[in-house]
Image (cartoon, rainbow, N blue to C red; front, side):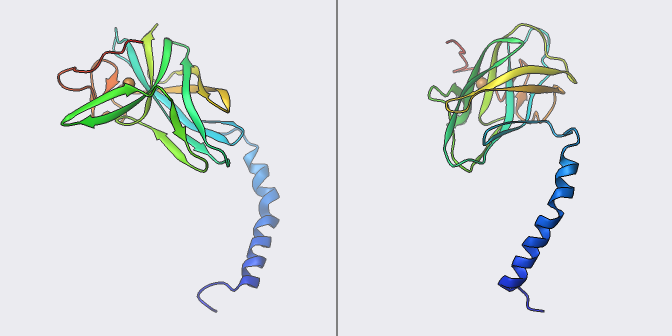
Length: 186
Ligand SMILES: [Cu+2]
């Protein structure tokens, strides 16, 4: 047996895989436990946010965006049922201070790429929360893409401490210690 399958053998293997596909797709019809949303070539995997302390004005939103298509797109905004406005932000080290800013032109989602919005990195910012976010609930919202348009999602509200390595009280992650540059105006 050669270490690598010869082309004919590989072809047989591929044919074999296709042969079992019908069974596999039957399974896939079962209700998806996975928390993901699809539109065209975009998959939005596990949109989530964090529970907020009382009085918090904003919260971060996180999701993994997979672009299986051949065309780039851009995440330009979104909506969240319990906030007045949703922005797309990035966090960056400036000297010793982690700062965040709104991405005016949106976040590039290149063709074939997986872009992760996560604490300490790119994220959505739900501005002016209209109610506290409670762990264990789901909140409806949308992600807005330049080309794919608006895609409805549900954000799972996770514990206030979820992946909170850099989290400070106030409903945002990785606030600069001195609060400098944290103006979230329009
Ligand atoms: Cu932010």
